Length: 334
Image (cartoon, rainbow, N blue to C red; front, top):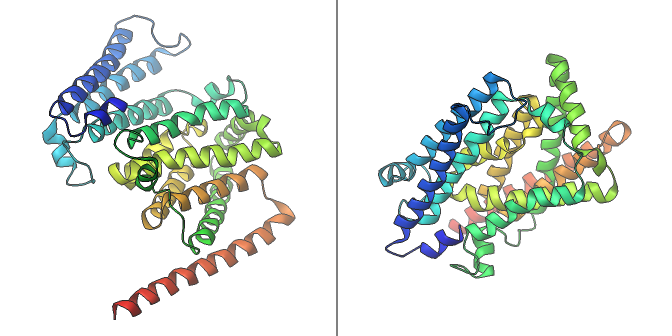
């Protein structure tokens, strides 16, 4: 991404980034072809069916990503999403978005990601930081900080601005709505697919069990809430659109496998995207952090009713604030 930002506005920019993108997708395709041909490049514990599916997925993903190296295809895509087909950064963003999305979907669909997560050591705060830091780095480098944009310009491009007063209670209210939705979805999951729901619960407890401390809960709330929002809602959504961003966001949360929880993540991703679209990334960050905090502390029992009452008040105040804002704008326009 550094090279792509340096290439913006240069005559040779697209040629160089296209060569780099072609090299990356070719390497991915060759990896899949080599493993499909008998070279043991993937994990040895995979079944023959899973190995074939992963190899085929890599090859298909590479072919799909390679399509965005062609300007006519990018030009057609630009009619749907706000990209510049001649911008090297936008070109690489499309290519690597397809690569990540394709690999993640293939992994979730054709491997037992729940068993894989259970075989890994539980997350620590350091692990969480290491996992999320690439999102933050990709976001700030992707928008060209210190290359094409100053830090204040990069912050504005990412949507990191001072929120209006009504956007804060709106973020908190939306977090409460998301929390209620996830709890309802979890209830349905235990009713309709109890075995899968128990496996997801076991995996979640294993992965995040060591973070059930005040510092761990704070880390789970803040680190993903900030890093993920800056990349997905801040950097990517204004370019690849709300739906594609929500799909990509959902695909990186592999700890839930193919379950109701995955569907819940997708719905929350859409909600955060709408919040970002009509407010800013600061507001979606506040919402994401608050939601993660609610999940982390596990509100239940006697605390649930007061929490719902507070959230209802926040929703009402947010609705009034939005209505008042629209009324003032209408009055000024008149």
